[in-house]
Image 1 (cartoon, rainbow, N blue to C red):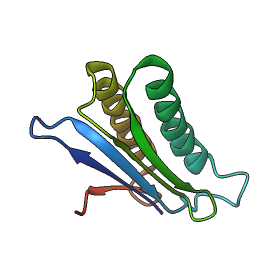
Image 2 (spheres, rainbow, N blue to C red; image 1 turned 45 degrees about the vertical axis):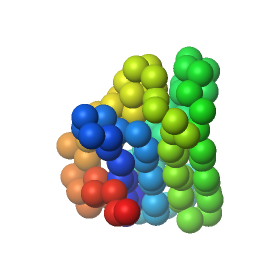
Image 3 (cartoon, rainbow, N blue to C red; image 1 turned 90 degrees about the horizontal axis):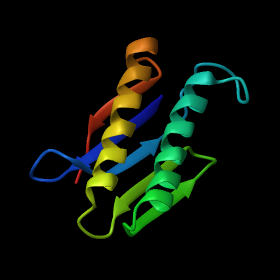
Image 4 (cartoon, helix red, strand yellow; image 1 turned 135 degrees about the horizontal axis):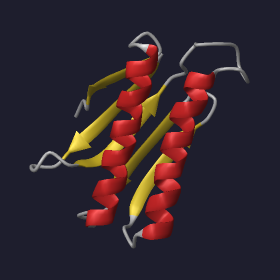
Length: 109
């Protein structure tokens, strides 16, 4: 199962996200749920880098299915929108495939 968590600011906007694990929907190379979640996460990072001036930290470990992204400073409106879009996409995958393969959890500080 992929565990996805978001950290929010005082206004309820996401400022960081973390992905952990593998979906287990199908075997490696055929797992469309894992692929969908991975594309959303990678596209979000690439979009923040390409379309904003926001500085961020990222840590990844492909083998264990781990990605942690956080803005270094207060994100721009564009950065906030991109993380909201990621959250919307993850919720859509959960709706389509149930909580068996992806779980949206509270950010544990």
